[in-house]
Length: 207
Image 1 (tube, rainbow, N blue to C red):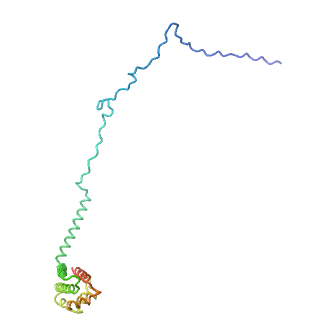
Image 2 (image 1 turned 135 degrees about the vertical axis):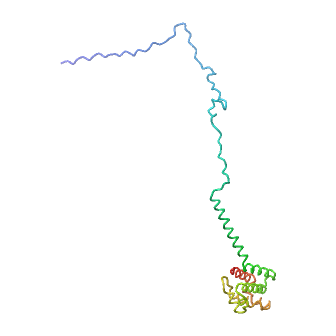
């Protein structure tokens, strides 16, 4: 058996294209068209404040006003009231202290020590003995104010600010000693400054 003959190849014709526009003979070719310069120039910006200005509706930045000092916050009034209260309490305490016998005795002692010679332990002891006896007499009566010797020394080592035993013994004996002897007794252990400080501390404690 013989195979059938192959079918002849079919040739596809090229796609038809549109007609080419060719100017007819004798027609001049038109020149290239160019945009006029006035069309390429951008328009001028709108005048400030005009209706066409997009920034005309904006307003300047306004900062908030400064915070005033007055009226103050309630906390400041509370703090001021507390300060006034503390000052009033201190003033009352100072006034009451100035009315006490201890304050007057302290002023008297400072005045007598100020009139004494510097570095004179005997003069400080005499002034202290005089002031302390006046103070004891005003507070406890004549009986205790007239104590002498060991009894007076024992009284000075009592109270809220007692003297040291050596200071109390010196105060009990020094007013009756010659100044030179009192200086020899106090040498090396008692100085005018330390004795005066002990007397002031003792007087303040009796307020």
